[in-house]
Image (cartoon, rainbow, N blue to C red; front, top):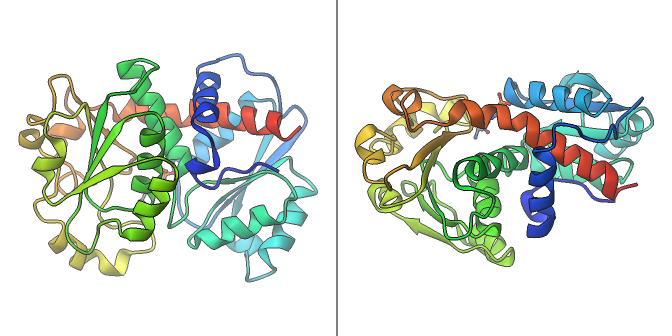
Length: 298
Ligand code: CP
Ligand code: NVA
């Protein structure tokens, strides 16, 4: 059974097929009369709403479930949660802390499982990110470049995979202690993706087509906020930094944004920013993915 826990669960051709389907506003009603269980252990604005609407657009019925209600590995095992929800629903989406929990839900092979963000990965975001890059630069992204500035985190991992698999050169600038290590670089290499890890934001953004950042303190890391604010000083995306990217370079952010921290208000709300089309693309990308997943698992 096919699931989507991370972008490298897909081949580059499958990724492109999902993006093509994301652009189709008249999808097959693959979820007609069926449900999708959406379990959230963390808050969400974009993921919940884009997934609910994608399910509706495929003819289905989304059921939002607060994580504590099903209590993965608390009330019952992940496998039993998957079997239970799978007996009512055609698919399961889950937003969790430990990535092992989405792996365990998928391992039950009850129904296809979609990772709606774990501490390790955010593949739905990456699908929308490359869709947004295609909107800007055309369907063939080969030869383009993107700089990620900030915390090398779940969003970075999925973004680097999706971009790299489509031929986009990826440069990442993070402060010491917040960079990808050998495990991450090996996993990227296995997917055929080589990223350039650099020390300074200026090195990363020089001449690139897109600049991307995410929050410095992810969900679940709130106790580290003060330490992180100090560590990331100088890694905010400013107009000055954007000026060092290519002419016509765009700014992307998965959101929520903290203006004045990882990005200035002038950049987030300025002419190069594509954060709102990018947010809306979450729904189109989710619809393309769910359509494809239902079809390949038929
Ligand atoms: N980008 C993103 O996943 O947003 P939410 O946390 O609001 O779902
Ligand atoms: N890295 C962030 C992304 C939020 C969409 C987090 O995990 O909180």
